[in-house]
Image (cartoon, rainbow, N blue to C red; front, side, top):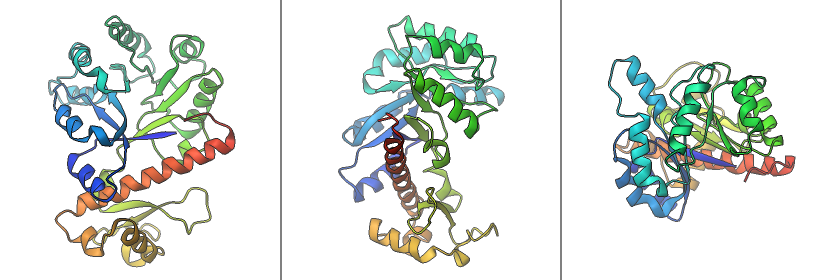
Length: 297
């Protein structure tokens, strides 16, 4: 099972490689209507295991709502793929409609890209097993890698039901933009992506995989000093695993309290901690999938 870290920044990647120079990460980049990714790819190509390209259609949709003209469209996306698709192991369809009724338009975009000789990964937005969209892809011999995208009905029971149905049909499933352990561990999800390595540090908290918990999901959240929310025991001063967290940070990364709280690079250091957390989640989910007999590697 693979977790792709999305919205990766060069600064945080460099800090991660300072500690783990031989690492190869799975990375998802979103097409933004320009060639701005090329410098990033040239710098980090030796440290990327597999690279996925999102079409940027979701970002374009919200730019449209704000009445901002988006550079992302299927024509520019096709032009970009003509020149750069060799860099990407997987690239996503330009799925511009995110409602349950968007299958027709999204599939037209799929065929538009296929006419250029591309093989984009279709994105499903209808989570009803009986829907035309789901039934089409379940019964198609053409598509073997599918993405579960945005939906108002995107919850763990529906994710499990859909992923199990597609798995039994011999398909591999990518879960778009959802990377919680509970959504991944007990469903045959082969791929997912997460931007959650990036934003917790900016919001003054972090995740870490806590070996002192007896639960199978050892995800633990801790608020950095200054973020007082009063939610359970997450605040720094009262967190029951604060010392264990700091021991882990010192032993794994060589970071001190000042590095995480006072350094001018503190947000990069926090991102490194979260990036490592998702590598731990990836390893644990892969282990559980093997025990369950899922072939998701």
